Image (cartoon, rainbow, N blue to C red; front, side):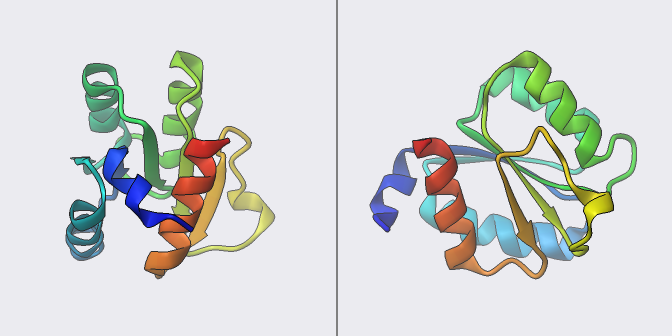
Length: 121
């Protein structure tokens, strides 16, 4: 994959767990044009409306508004690709509005590949 294309992409990353958020944000900032960060779905909706990122990467289990509800609201606002991140790999954690899915812990090449696939589709 051509990872140079990542430099043209803006990302909204949503994660409530501080250690996970900090490590992934460091990775994202090295590769992507701009990274917006939210700690829950409610905060993410406000950032999404203000910044219009190219893709949203969100955890599923969060306080205030979970990733499933966030995905539903973003989908109601537009066609921005959504990638959900979860530690669970079962049918109860499927999100129909999502364009892609990653399992925790996030492997960087899997992340880069799914982002490129989603924004290229």
